Image 1 (cartoon, rainbow, N blue to C red):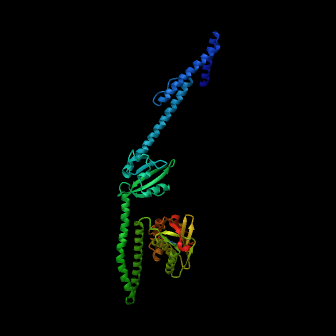
Image 2 (cartoon, rainbow, N blue to C red):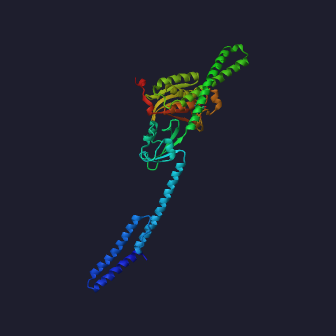
Length: 434
Ligand code: ADP
């Protein structure tokens, strides 16, 4: 039977019995009041028991009661047990997450919305020098003060990791990666990449040293070959022909060594090249003349300056990058092709474009074009004097100027190489304003 019905029946019986008893004594009202009073007292007792139980929860068993109060206590007890189970499960999960983070050799630091430290594993103590408990609640940039980290933290664009020396040991190199999660909280991971960094440095130094060492013997060799070539008419024709080939191959090796040295320098130097004001019109004019000399009258090269802004960067590096793109356009587009060097405004800042209407490139090759020694057609590249390093150099120069390279091309429809420079790399071109 419904509990509420039983409860109402109980109340009704109590009232009827006590009202009738009151009637016997000529005071039914007093009887009814007594009945209601008894009923209220019973409920107050149960309420008191409930209150006592709730304050002692969750340790104690619920008070024993029948009727509606028994059902209420049972419900609450079941609910409370389920909640305790969920809490235990969550606690276990959290403990497991903390245990696994604790076992990691990488540093894991949980930051709240403001960037204050909430929790970290013991690797973070060893790697970043965090001290429990006094650092809890401190802002992360009070503990890792390097301006590059502060800048990285504030930027909120955490796609790329940041490499820095450890804040407590400058012989160690760490890679920091921030991730946004949950309610705008951040997770900081730091990994010790000292070994990898050393290997990478050894590789760069090795390439730079080998290239450097090769330079002198090559210069001597090409000097002798040139001298012999001056007297080629005195030699048997077969020897004279091989002399020509030896000169070509030596020139190729010299180009290769020069490009390798250039790449090593770009990699080894500090990431930010010095910021000189570079006016584009004279630079493009010089490159145009060099390109015309290389083309030997087989191409038309024009310049379109549509922006009055100048670049802030390293003039030598910029010249090398734009020359590489322009010479590629000459070398990979056929006779009679048109090449345009364009400097124009762009939504992200400004863009330098080198466009040709030559043979173009199949889009499948485009993502790999800036890899070292990647060539679409090896024979063609070698034949035209390519080292396979030109676009790798372009990519590095642009990276050092906070710029990016975009390539658009289809076979038979020419190629467009666009270098997009951000606003912070631009300034007014005073030469253009004058
Ligand atoms: P390479 O020394 O071989 O020219 P790069 O790194 O400069 O090396 O260029 C990589 C490859 O990209 C080239 O081998 C060539 O196939 C292709 N390429 C570059 N520029 C152009 C262009 N303007 N038109 C067609 N193909 C190009």
